[in-house]
Amino acid sequence: MTQLALVIDLNVCVGCHACVTSCKQWNTSGTAGSLVDINPYAAEPNGTFFNRVQTFEVGEFPNTQTVHFPKSCLHCEDPPCVPVCPTGASYKRAADGIVLVDYDKCIGCKYCSWACPYGARELDEERKVMTKCTLCVDRVTDTTLPTSERKPACVLACPSNARLFGDIHDPESSVSRAIAERGGYQLMPEWGTSPSNHYLPRRKTEIRIHAEDLERVDNPLKIDGQLPEHAHRDPGREDFAT
Amino acid sequence: MQPAFSVIFLTTLIGAAQGLFLALYGTELVGLGGLSEADSQRFLVNGSAVALVMSALGLVASFFHLGHPERAWRSAAMWRTSWLSREVIALPLFMLGLFIYAGSHALGRGNTQIVGAATALACIALFVCTAMIYASVRFLQEWASPLTLINYLLLGCASGLMLATLLAALSGLSTLIQPYALATTVLTLLAWITRSASLHRNARLKPKSTLQSAIGIKHPRIVQKAQGFMGGSFNTREFFHGQSPKLLLTVKWGFLLLVFPLPLLCMSLGVIAASKEMLFAAFAMQYLGLLAERWFFFAQANHPQNLYYQNIS
Image (cartoon, rainbow over all chains, first blue to last red; front, side, top):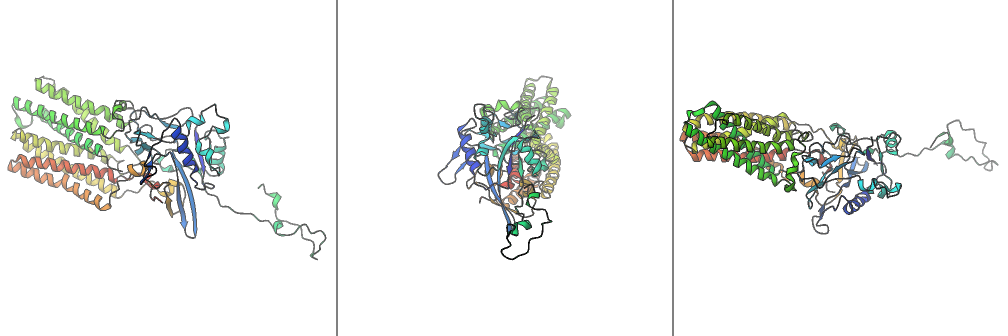
């Protein structure tokens, strides 16, 4: 069974909000739209977004890290928002695991938003129906698009490639490999919702310097009068895969 | 959570209506007060009609909660999984039962006990459905407790019995007033204990989710620097009550006084002085207190999504 999902790399997200704006643009113009904007250019602007980038500071100065944290619907494998819906407007697609809202059935009771611990759902104040990230279902299933473009708008927009998209149930997919190899994790695992979207943790960036990087090896004529160098016994550059 | 007045009125109105009906049906079953046939018929018909009107008002209030009230009929569809859907079925069933019960008494049919039993079943089912809507949302730990169900049941019965006492006084059925007042006292005291127990429990709750589990970073010191937008959104409107802790405290002590000791005192004085005005004041005071109680019930619930919205920027 397929479970489409996003894998978000917190190590390279720069917090530019390109995923936020591209999401808003695509979805307000597509089948999920239009997403309301109340007072967009006046005091107290307000509106519906499917995706947000938040910023957290971790640690105490001077040992701090600024973590940019994109958050959208996590398309849980066991979505708590679906069974509570009284009309069946909220549903999870069997074919690809995307959690969607049928806007024609939604009565706008907001109960599903109470049942989502992540705050992924937003009531559209103009259309009075619950809205949420569709994982750009109208893009990813559109066979008229070239395969490389059958991805959510946020994934295509990300300039640092922090957003990966694919089937997390396929162990060979790039997202599954990223989760397995880089310690991909889920948000709020304590609730047992099993979110499909995963996050890749920050990594420590370090440079590895070998002895041969510091010593001059191309000195065949010994013009500086130094003795020939001893052979390196430590593993050198070429002994490392990186 | 942001308290929703539509739901506050819905739950308090139907709670009182359900309590009133159970009091009426109990009266019929036990033959309380030794009423004459005519008195009993008149009282049960009038009482059921009051319960029906209150349920209808509650139903009307609930429509104000919906973004698309014209699609409300759809909400009976998912009764297999959704407590909200079950409530949507139970409430009209209870109202239908009330209507038939009142009608059977008015027409002098002999089947009132069976109709009453079926209506009582719908009434209990409605109590369970209404409470489980809240108790089943496990993310709102303040609600996710059997105490929620017990409180809805006991508070509904207490205010319904208080109303029954008032109606008995208004109908001039003095033999009913004392037993009703006694039952009101017992149920109000029981509700006082269970509601205090839930306040006690909620004051000691440890949130299951933390900022650490919310963003998956295991560091003791994490501070939000930006929530991603400067204006408001559904997330900042729906899940925050936006009131000061002081107001919350005032409402808490307000409802603890208005729902339990003051109406009981007022009712006792009303029974002793045989004063309809005092009994009316007791019911009105308790209903007002219940509105405050329901408001506090919402405001106290702390949703885990709030972890993501702690700082605008």
